[in-house]
Image (cartoon, rainbow, N blue to C red; front, side, top):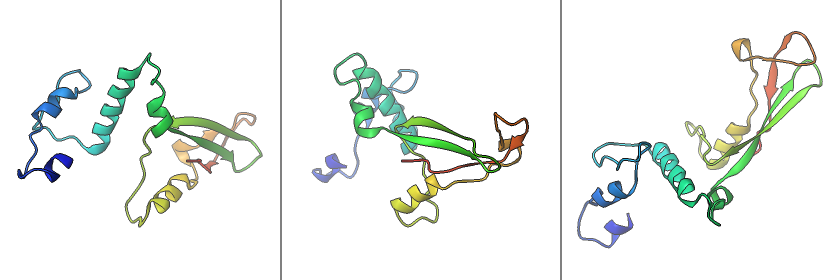
Length: 138
């Protein structure tokens, strides 16, 4: 957008950009092929991580863009719980019918009852309990 802002042209020639950025097979991006923002962002961050691997800047992307959330499972029938930390660079947030980023994040950390094939087996007990993951910290 910056290139268009200072230009009299109404388009940006993407050939050089597409040649510089490679796809998952290390081939230049096809300039006439559409890619959604999430797909491109993941591709670009993956390439940046690979480019700085083994350098003093190796953790720069994780440091500035990454985080950790806690996926927590709570048994509704007993006191057992399980927590697992999960690193992330991108959070897939539900934006439908949300008016703010805060609402999106609140929806992300909201618990849900796991039932049927999604139910977890509570280890210390010999039958399957419904479990409730809550408080995924962002």
